[in-house]
Amino acid sequence: MNTAAIETVRTPEDEAFLKRIAAKIHATGLITPAVFFLELAKPLSLIGAHAMVFFGPILNAFIQTDGYYRAAELFEEPDNVEFLIAELERLDREHNANKEG
Image (cartoon, rainbow, N blue to C red):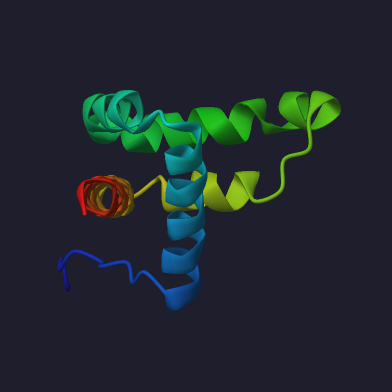
């Protein structure tokens, strides 16, 4: 029996989706709290993703949730959370470099 771990592959569409999320967070100016929260929640990303799926029908009744379930699927993997954090930090560095230069 092969007990090798199954690796998930992040597609270019997934990366583009995560970059759009990072850009929206960057536009709000809440990069530091977002990175702090994501770092804290990274070990619990699977539970958080399942909670997102559980509360999805309730949220759909009140707000437009374009991409909500896709985000829940992506956040099941801690590597995707790490990618989002790295993208937020990259956007912050670029913003600071443009502000200084």
